[in-house]
Length: 257
Image (cartoon, rainbow, N blue to C red; front, side):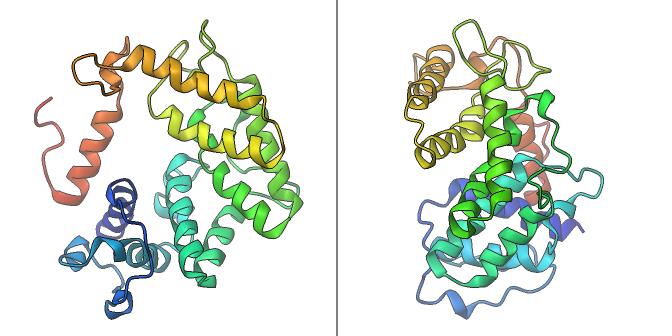
């Protein structure tokens, strides 16, 4: 189980760190992904082959992606990150196994009526918007109405999402008046794609405002970078990353804190 989780964590890390997401490398078929393999198997492999190789590893080890953590089966952003990445591999390769894997794992949550299992509207978690990007992709590819209904539910959440006085989205209902930097990744790509698909250009101003407000309140004037350290409360993003590093590389997640 530890090795299987390592593969999943490596997949998420590679999604953020790999610049070249090409899945069509000339030697991409020269490497065999072994069941329950660990990160050492990927040493020396060109970064442009990682998306395909890690997608294959996830597919083999997690036929039902939602069950990677049996103690927390839920509609969540991890699901969105991984499936969105595998969807991009499908766009590159057109190998149906990637399409089928994404569809099967989204269908694990979305019923024929368009309801989303485990999703709770009134919790107003921006994290729950992240998988909506793949829902829109599936709707474009299949025209199955259940995906449109599910996307409409997520879009309705954004319409009713609590906001700061300036108009910024709260990250969650349990974090009143807090905008989190990663909320931009969670919500805005879906928000923008939905506006484009269903011809709602008025939403673009609101999307842009989320970035403007985040920059205003989180930019470090010394570096020009946005940082969660600029928020009024101590956020947990750094600790989560350290836990991931600890899981994969065995380093002490508490070091330096």
